[in-house]
Length: 361
Image (cartoon, rainbow, N blue to C red; front, side):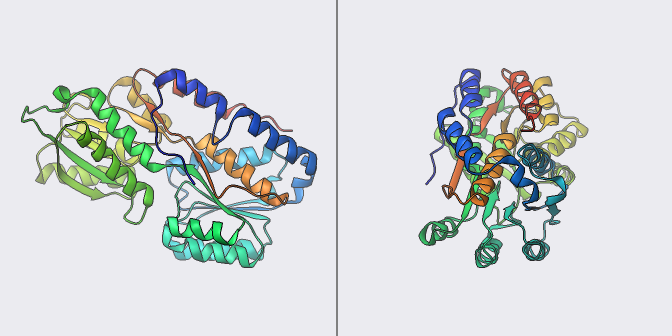
């Protein structure tokens, strides 16, 4: 169903990824585009309606994702007036209500970033019962739910990267720094804070688990002296770490499930008089623009690019195929990319170029 997390080899494979994109070769993508172009003229999308639900509109990463998604849909011929984007305030009841409202508006497809995995089956049932295909993004539903889509051949799929890979890459970022640098107090053990995204979130769980197991498997001993949930939020993460520093020893490493929390962590440690990138090493996930700048200046030890551009376009393409009467794989995956001081400028330029390459048909 999905490919396992592998290892990308620096900038060379980064450029290869630029060429191949998510889950398919250039030839496969061109074939899909040709089929869509032949079966459905671009003008016909102007009357089609797309409903988009984002778990929380204030989330930095999902803001980038939804903006990219809307721009790409517009470039494919959808009218902006027929693209409905709802923020769900990180509240599952609100999101369920929004899905029902979009169904009542007779949308032709739903693209949903679920608040949590426990409500996915209910949203799936709402869509299936009303003949509306669903594309889930960024937050992966559970394996049992995905198996149900396959078993009953629902027009439902998930588009996203495998979060286990991002955790592995975070661990590798720390390994590459080296035990001697990480082990500031020289006791042979790396003391660390773990700042988690959300309790029910599969991605948060995988990033937490695999970042640590990767370091452990390299023979570097780790000791967790603080493990707190900060709900993907910069301000919350900053407060968590400020409180942690008052009660616990200063960590040698801070592992954050996303960049927003990593940026909050940087503010907290710097205000405490610690030098990020020397006294404590902070890693994140997403490669937000602000985070990339911090990697470039050396304060953020590294991040992992969560390719919102390719994911948003793959999600839109999946919705378009459903609207055109075609099917999709139930899991459409792509790779993360490690971002270090060595390739941060390249990744930054690549992202900027991709964001400006959409041309209306």
